[in-house]
Image (cartoon, rainbow, N blue to C red; front, side, top):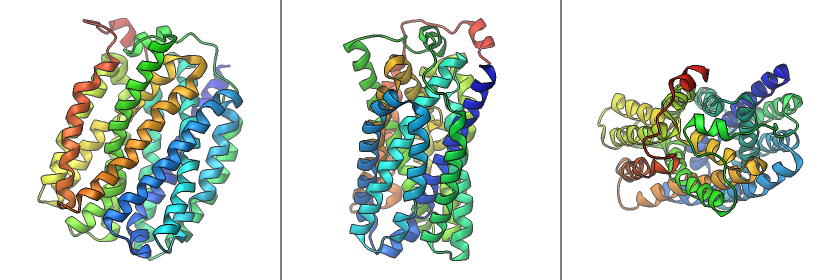
Length: 402
């Protein structure tokens, strides 16, 4: 069992890297696709909502389906679908074809996202200690890989559709090979003790549990709104506002993704020692400082520093929310994660759309000031993860959790 659990953990890492690479490949090709289709920033912002709607539908379908069929079936299916549809936005030649491509790609993304996070909850439950942030760190590794590859293909003048199709084909193979090591079903492990150690409320039943999951979903909406803004506007910001080349602009997203990776590699230990509340509250506050520097920084180094702080601050936030949702009711981990992830993805795509619409009124960098205000709001509302007054971490828990 120990060997199969380690293999399942490695397979989960693989799927998170895969998903980050596939999604990141689309992100770094946004400037080229925007130019190919002849659309404005504001129009792109509206079209990105279509991707979010597709992801939301995919998540709502995949959540209950994962609980019913098992992650070993749904996770690889989602990976194959994502790889198969990745090249579609690269073929778009006008707003309508791009909208259709983003809808289909978003639907497949939602299926993979929820199912692999549900599997990550099962693995974390079996380990009995926080490991969720580590999985999300490898998602960010995928983003870094996509940024490096995107910078190379952009500098070489390679057609986006060709580059995206090649990445998707490799992704299909990886999704099928990694499937054999996934857990067949949720482990029969009581998660109340783990929830207490992680600094979140223990599982509950009934309306109270459902209500808390929706509160977590609202926080996820806000946090992923910021992440979506970085995903979809970081490269364009460096290119249009700071005057960087297309190749250099890709590294704006790469910087953010690298900071997310580093932060998530550390977040499990921080959560085990100080609790999820500290990770969410202080992370949101740090992200507010970072995005303010991006919005107002007059020099390239200041902007890169801002994206770094923004990524570090946000890095541990989403994993804490997903983990708390998955442990709220072990028998419905997929459905609960789909609620949190689904509403989160509404935020991920609504945020970039709002930024796009704001560019009608203010410059792109000044539109980021809105994110500063929302990050501060998240820091204040992080108390939903609080388990009670004056609860302190027990030293023996912190020492024994890794």
